[in-house]
Structures are given as C-alpha cells and as structure tokens.
Length: 463
Ligand SMILES: Nc1ncnc2c1ncn2[C@@H]1O[C@H](COP(=O)(O)OP(=O)(O)OP(=O)(O)O)[C@@H](O)[C@H]1O
Image 1 (spheres, rainbow, N blue to C red):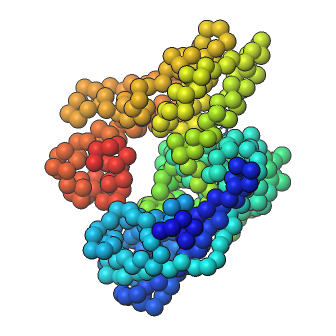
Image 2 (image 1 turned 90 degrees about the vertical axis):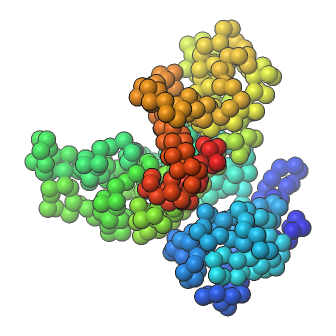
C-alpha cells in the first residue's frame, strides 16, 4: 500500500512530531453469515471475532472468539491473525500478518472481507510535553498517552492501564490520582496478585469482627480506605472469578458490604486498574468476566515495552541520575561515558523501565568516582535478561528447578518476574518437547488456549 492511503501518519513540525493522523478504513463483509455488513476502522487497533469484547463482531461459527486484528501503522493497515483455529487467508495462503493494499480481500473462517479506504482522517493528538506528573517520555507513544491523560486524569472515569511488567503502569495510576481533584485524598494500592485468595474479599471490602476465624477486629477494606480518593487495583487479571461479580456491583452501584456485615456502605472512590495480561483473551477463555472488563476499560491506556520507544531511554536515564544525586549527601551527579550510553540504547530491556532504573541506580551508586563506564552497568550479555536465566533452568534439570535462586540486587517485582520467567520457560520447554512440538496438544494438557500457548512459545523463542 502506498504510504498515506490508509493507516497512520505522523505529522512533524520543525522535525518534531506534533500529531498523528489516522486515515480511516472500512471493512466490508462480501460473503458469509454477516454479508452486507460494514465496519468503520477509526482506531489505531481493532479486533474482530465472535466474542463481544471485539470491536468488529462477526457471527460466522467458523470464526474464532478473537480471530484477527487490524493495526494502523505508518506502512498501512496490518492484518494479523490472532491464533485462530480456521486461519486468516489472503490469496489462498494462510497468513500470520500482512499489510493490506486498498480494496484487498481476505478470508477469516468462511467469511470474505474487503478493506476499503475511506476519505476521512482522525486526528490523534500528541502532548507537547515530555512528562506528565513525574512520568517521563518523549516518544510518540508516550506523548499520545500523555495527551489522553491530560484529558481524562481530571475526570472521574475508570481507567484500565495495560502493559508489560515494569512499563510504568503503577506510576501512571499515581499520576492520574495526582492530576485529579482527589489528589489530597487517599491513594490506595491493592495488588491482586499478592493477596491470598481466601483473604481477598476482606482486603477489598473489609470485614466485621468475628466474620471468619481470625477476624478478631473489624477491618476497613480497600474501598473504605480509599474513600474520597483513588483505588488502584494492580494485576486485576489475577482477581478470582468468584470475586469479580462483587467488584462489578461496587463499580455499578457504588455500594458494598463488609464480609460478615449487614450494613450497606456507600463508596466514593475512583478506580484505576492495571494488568500485564491480555484481559480480552481472558474474557474469551472465560477466566475474566466480560461485563467487568467493559466496566473497567472505559478508558484504555496502553504502555508499549521500552524496546519499542527507545527515544525515551536518554530522558529516563537523566531522570534516574537526578534521583540518585538528590539522595546523595554531597548531591554529586555522576555522568555516563558515551560507550555506556550506547550500551543502554542497544540493550533489549525485557524488564522495561524498572530494569533500566535498577541498572542506573546500581551503577551510579557503585561506580568509583563520578563516571559510569560501560562495565559498571552490569548488563547481561546480548541476550534478553529475562530469557538468559530462564535458559539456565533447562528441561529435565530437576535439581535446578527445585532450587530457588533469589537475586537480592533486584527490586522485589523484578526478582519475582525473573523467577516466574524461569518457571514459564522450563514448563513450556518440557510440555512442548513431551508433545513432539504439537501446540494444540501442549495447550490442551496445560489447560490454556492454543493462542495463549503459541504466544508463550514465541515469547520464549521455543517456536
Ligand atoms: N515513564 C516513567 N517515568 C519515570 N519513571 C518510570 C516511568 N516508567 C516507569 N518508571 C519507574 O520504573 C519503576 C517500575 O514502574 P512501575 O512499578 O510503575 O511498573 P509496572 O508496569 O506497574 O510494573 P508491574 O507490572 O511489575 O507492577 C518504578 O520505579 C517507576 O517509578
């Protein structure tokens, strides 16, 4: 497709990106159960499939829950199969991803679709600023997030922040609170992955004295603690299915009861949630309620991995060096050699901004003198940090998998993430080998979808 026909275009003024323009498209169903229908593409990413979480809903039974996505890029509209059972085909070939030319037709299951260009443009604003309430970023992606935050943070809207671990989701949640009228009221964080399942309800809604064994005193839950302020629900994808209807009810009625309590308590707090999981996929798998997903995702913010916004690295490095200097009694600020800076730009950063921060803080604190050399950074080889240790736990190496290597030089979250990553790699490696590389069988035995299995195998470069 010729640039500008369809897809997204970044507008520059004096070499600086000032906005993005999305040239709309229209997806027309030429043949199949939805024949005659058409869907406008006016967002930078749309999903299509049979499940209602999709932007484009298709009825054809041969189409998967989420079958394909169309993403607006500078090169045009990218059609990507989402691990569908019956495949996405173009010109008789089953495709994984392909750029669509204007008026190209393709098949999804038994449905034939055509993507037509539309002569209309949607302006996607970019903030002129390189920070928002202490969140730093100069990339187009981050300035797009800042532009959204400038509008929605002062509102009362519920936000869902998506992104890999360490991309800054919690930082953004805090920024939303700080930019809202609730800033002087409490900001309460509830990490849904860190609380035992049977205590979760009491953590969220509180409990009355004697509500259960061990409930010696009454206790206010997160909603009460956050009264008037903001409740940040971190790792919302970990919230047990049995608690999800209760959370939905508070979000809808603003009312709840403590565990073991009869009194209805009114709640006035804004909810911001975050996840590093694909909640849409979880809805398709039945592990996350669809109605709760819609309630939480009134505003969706996506934080790309650091490797996709390398322009942010120099600014973040300066920011973290300033932070270290402020904490030093002599306020001395260290500097990085050109070699060290090049190494930071080249690193894959699987642990995202958290990993970058750890590297800078460690190097700045441990370097001798006032200069950080390349070797002070202690970057792991050229391999992604997460997969290198993961490979240490090789298939069949039971001794290794039984011992737990805890790295105390890392922040808690990164250390946890690394261990989980090692486990994921070891599990996948074994199940995939056991099933002679058969993805469907491996997925069935693991109790996850084929799509999820494929994505995991790709992540660990096992496939
Ligand atoms: N854009 C940013 N500007 C400044 N600091 C940042 C930015 N992004 C992340 N950080 C810092 O990096 C660290 C990790 O960020 P944060 O905890 O918000 O990530 P997260 O996405 O919530 O991670 P997880 O999914 O593991 O909870 C924090 O110390 C945070 O302050």
